[in-house]
Length: 202
Image 1: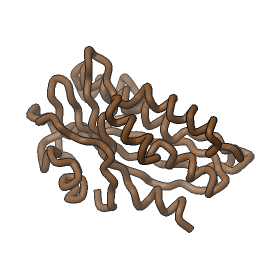
Image 2: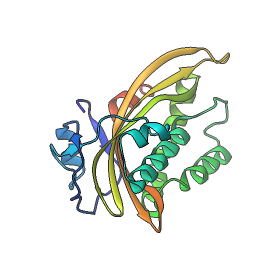
Image 3: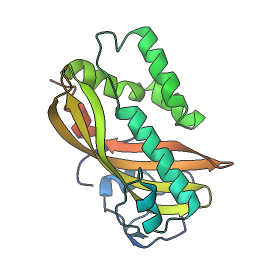
Image 4: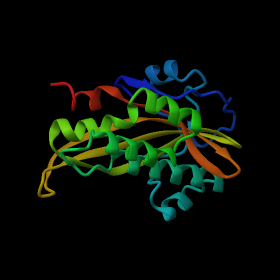
């Protein structure tokens, strides 16, 4: 990744299982995530939302489950219907409750305290648009029995009041997912800070 990213999770597990093709190099991401792999083999880009595509890449069941959890998280994070009260106390509380299901307890607490969960809402309010993600793709960087590191890319689509696309913003980042008894959740998200902040800052 060539754009600045913001790391909002802590990667604490050593990743040792190598996969089959190469991770995108990113000095920013590697410096932000202290245990991020560098130049290790990985799988090619794959649509996590399509089970047939996952099967074609011969991902193991744990990897597929982690990718599905990552896809569910990004869909929930970036799907926003615009309204005038998105940043009301009730709306913020609902938003944080919705994101809790996708995040580990520690990461959810950090994300809420630092208001990272509200960033898409702030974009919607500032731009006066609804949001939805398209072309969401994942690349496995590394994996252990209970942890998976994924690079992701997507188009963040901005929609006017009639549902017409007004802008399309490419975003990318890196997710850390951990598993407890088969329940995969996001432990960290290093996202494309510049692309998103440009939608908020005048």
